[in-house]
Amino acid sequence: MADADEAARERLDQDEIAKVRLGDDAALEALLRRHEAPVLRLVRLLGVAEIDREDVAQEIFVRLFRHLHTFKIGRSFRGWLYRVAVNVVHDHRIRMSKRRRREAPWRDEFNELEDNAHLPSRNAEAMQQRDRLESALQGLSERERAVFVLVEMTGLDRKEAARTLGITSITVRRHLSRARKSLQRILQENS
Amino acid sequence: MVDPNPKEFEKSADSLDSAIHAWKAASEQLPEAGFSAGDRATLIARIRTDRTENLEKKPIASLFLPFGKMLGAAGIPALLLAVTFGWWIGQGNEPQAPLMIHSSKSGGEAVFTIANGGKTHRVYKSHALRGTSQQELFTTTTDAFSDQLNDGNGVTYYRID
Image 1 (cartoon, rainbow over the protein chains, first blue to last red):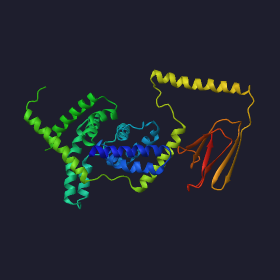
Image 2: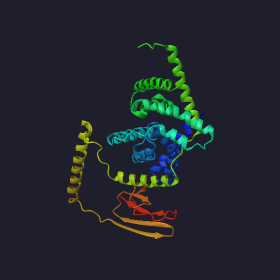
Image 3: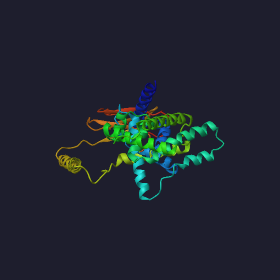
Image 4: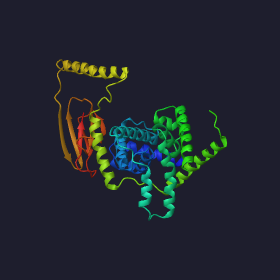
């Protein structure tokens, strides 16, 4: 069922890409609306500080549509989008390290939790559950993190993740295995 | 290296899988917000401008190109120069028929007349003076063609190549 939904979304994407190429702004907006939230989430999972997330997400879409003419119809749009996202986040990370700015701490989520104390307790609990794993991601290298996020958290299969990151399936498996071991250790230490 | 305590390892693997499961459940409860309407509109405008600018000039991305690409990068401009020069030399040898284009509006249609000796032309239509939204209408070898104007999109630009 989930696969059928995904295939339907993919078909919709392909139709809209064809329209965007002909200059249809409504199709451009529809593509943005459907993918902006997953992209913002991916940017968060890849460790971009909250203050920079919107800028980075916007840069992803600008770069994506700049190169839309190179997208091959029939290939996975989601995979291509995530590839652009990983590359833009990587560039952002390099820029940030050059400026010697520290990545915003993952305590942001806890701060939000404190700021939003009025939220229903069910949401507060959900936020804690979400933060538990996301804060553990800090202990991974950039590559391990990208592989883990794409495979375990956004639902790409290993082959698609390999294609997205431009690496082999064996490398994906190796990074995933290392990431899982590190996360197991971190979660155990935190519990 | 052998894990000193395999049972402990299995337990931690379980705890990671349950953390992933809990994360997925929590993410469903906390849907991610997208851009605000204003930010989205600004972004769309930025994308349109960027696409227009970058389709017109595509710089070579890196100075450190692989050999094949470097050869291509050097060879293609040389080839273009040679072709252009050849064409220019050829221009002097055969007389050219003068090209005349006449446009008029008739009813709800734009009517174009081309006097060019029956050469092939491509006709494009756009609602922006420069840009990526050009739509190829048709290829014509006849001396007159027309297009419906009343599509409610303001000024319409035509390009004839």
